[in-house]
Length: 504
Image 1 (tube, rainbow, N blue to C red):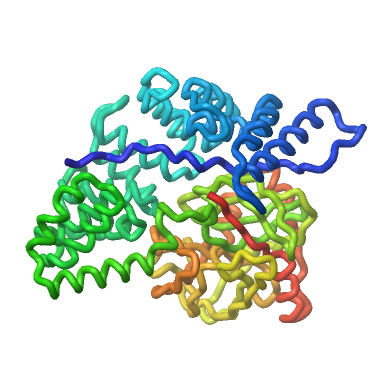
Image 2: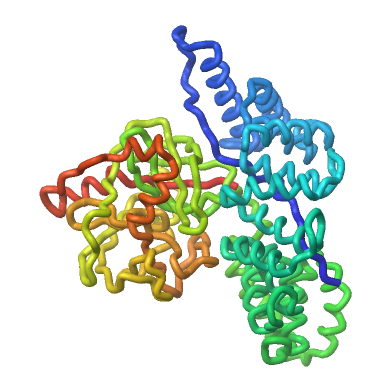
């Protein structure tokens, strides 16, 4: 039986940080309270994540409570999550709803999503789909993919809004494009059934496959069923058993019910081949499944645009993170998320540090054949992870799908470069490296891309995004003389480039 996945992400909280230095006598009471709140929040995170030791949820709750009472939004959200999951404290849905609602009143993105889910699932608050929708919309406006998926589910089910499959497909597609497995599976089911769009079993297979590769049980079952019946793909009992067996191992009831039936129809040789394919899948994807034990997401790159710690990176990197750190040389700095633009894959962050910015060059038009380079980082999280230099040329003033927002490069770029600046020979940023026409294919840690990640959003569109944040726009360098040499441009780029680490 088909079931739309309206789900709760219980380990994701937004990334908003404050400087945690010692208070000084000159601080106003309000400032001191804010600083103390940030201190206890970060201490709580350290105990919660078990940095340097095993997690200690009891001590984490102690610090979250202190910060929450000082009106620290993220601490309120974390305390609510601890009550919700019974971590470090007895489970209490009513108290969970109380603290998460407090955080949502400060327009905290993840708290908005979580409180919407509380209202939609009646866990700690009265059922109210319309109110849940309003909170989901607030989170979705900040680029939160699970909120987009749940908006789609409300439209599909007709909860709080009239049933509308077209609208459901729109929201699922946005979240699926951000590589959310639940949304990919839901979108595939709409394509398979022809709701909100013409039936297209082949397109359904594409989305099932994307979600199945993330170890999504329902998508694996649907993919296996499609192979078994030959819907959207040539019938293949070996692959049918492969995916249904994987789904059953993940606890899917339908897969558990039908696994033996399919197994009995395979020859010994076919069973051997299916086992080999299962082992291959597990070896390839086990490090990137939803059940992975690590709390670390892939790393990426960012670049500073002001002297006061404002930097840009890819929204794909940070959109589902609970905590972001920015590494300069060997020092990690907690980052505050200022604003995102999911459509153009941009995120604006800030750290409390003096920084060397790059000048965004929107004055001179780029030319085909122009020499460019970028500085980025490999997907390694150790302290001595070094930056890498990649040079190439602009080979198209449009993306491969003729999208005029993007430049296309001649050289493939590694996933670790995502969010970095594309820099000309004068040391000026002419764009930011993102997915471009490859939306929906975020990098996996340690993955070698088979396709070219070589699209760059032009600086003019970055400027349009920054124009919506006047305080940051006013701090952008107004002029920046060209570097005296290519080596000087490289040195400037290295100082302005930062390593982005995201924790889920």
